[in-house]
Amino acid sequence: MSAQDILVVAETNQDALADITLELLGAARGLASSTGGQVVVVILGQNGAQHAQALSAADRIMVIDDAQLAAYSPGPYLAVLQSVIESESPRAVLVGSTTIGLDVAPMLGARLNAPVVCGCQAMAAEGDALKVTSSICAGKILVDVRVERSPAILLVLPGSFQPAEQPGQAQVETKPSPVPLEAGQIQFQEMILPEAGDVDITSQDVLVAVGRGIQQEDNMEMAEELARALGGELAASRPIVDQGWLPTTRQVGKSGMVVKPKLYLVLGVSGAPEHQEGMKGAGLVIAVNTDPTAPIFDVAQFGVEMDILDLMPALTEAINAVRGG
Amino acid sequence: MKIAVVVRQVPDLIEPLEIAESEMELDLDGASFLVNETDDHAVEQAILLKEATGASVTVVALDFGDVDDTLYAAAAKGTDQIIKIPWEEETPPSPQAAAAMYAQVIKGIEADLVLVGTYAHDELEGVLAPLLGPALEMPYVGVIRGIQPGDDPSSIRAFKEFPGAVMAQMNVGLPAVLGILAAEQPPRYVPVSRIRAAMKSAEIEEQEVPLPAIEPALTVERMYLPEAGERAEMLEGSEEEVAQRIVQILQEKGLVK
Image 1 (cartoon, each protein chain N blue to C red):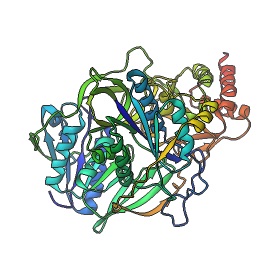
Image 2 (cartoon, chains in turn blue, orange):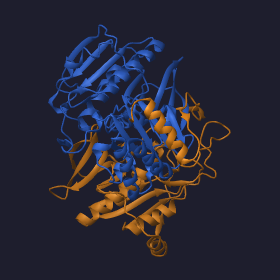
Image 3 (cartoon, each protein chain N blue to C red):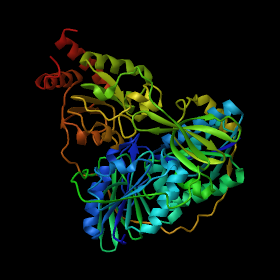
Image 4 (tube, rainbow over the protein chains, first blue to last red):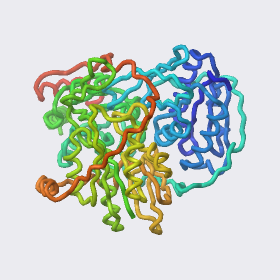
């Protein structure tokens, strides 16, 4: 590996390749074209080699196969990634801003005394430096930063780059962990799947998604009535689930569900990148928010600058009138 | 068990954000602040563990962004000790510097468990929560949605969120740092009267901590508001007029018949 290469940290979710990995690969291909280096993917786990074909747009795929890496635990993951980065000395390491990436990227930065940039949406080499554009404050602020030191560890926002899907001729090497692995103090015990019985929002044609603008739990009834009138189901952004007003199975976003309804009526949701990641497959998007600068209006086809508590009863009534409800 | 909770103030995103004339940082003069949402959940999770195990809870915060109100609210919820680190700069320290400062205070408490919000929306050059692990020489795991006491006093069970509403149960040997995404239950409501009572009874201890000499890892070249791209077509009028227009759109698309 040369000092101009880009290292991509692949992720899997229950043995399936995570979408973010192909997006990181797409970003890495673009960045490598400006550094003149190669793209190397490292994938940790017991069955990583099965994803080699999907990752073949890389120049090289390094599969680290070890029983300790079968499920995510921070200690073994960090030890392996630190060793790989130290031996490969890449120009940049691309990590998804995900449930695993948010753990490991900052700690790798601390261990390697390497710069870390959060919320990366764009990147390019400029001479010896990297120029990175980051999104902070829930997508309301953009920051152009210059990173001089290598390796730069870049936490990439899901949905920011086109996935690399062009098949290539990547070399695949499967090898054991380069360092002895111990379970450590934090150990994976078991995966807990969501309880069966709740509505599967990923298969719904009509979703009414509520966010902070709903203000109080008592107001959820209004949203339910609207969803019922439309023949749809309720979904939510993270704050509503964190409040316990809807179960986690209704959460749309990066760490929630990825939905693709024909109609996505978004009420009082600002549209942070994490939420947008879960709704990018939606058909018609109509957003209602009191904040005219809310990022949700960037992805909606139609928008309304209004308090959802004022609009919901009027809209329910209008729909019921048409449907004879 | 001794629990330390780190609490930060962040700009309120409901208010418009201003960028300084230098175009290199936020103009926080006149900004309104509130407690970082995931830190608020970390406080709640600490109180829940206190109720379940009798643990003591110490809140540690930097004196930034009108933090006193948040600290008194934490006291009213039942925390045992509050330590504030003086800070007079207009912007908060980098996550690396903040981690080193919080670590100095937390080492003095001899905490077994350190809870902090998994992230804050204004973090750019790193994330505080995972940096506290190396700073305290403790293991770290984040994106945690709920903690339960373990089978023995030296361990806990933490539930790490994965996509698709899937959780991973992690067994955590103490001491450790955990990044909290959400507590097992929403942060409890505290009446203003109890916060006022806490303002009279609770003591905020101030502890000076020197700012560590940490070289900036990156250079901010420009900070700006996103350019308006292809925005939504905005529907205007009264509630009834907008509702009628939406119904018309849905009918045109065959989504309401």
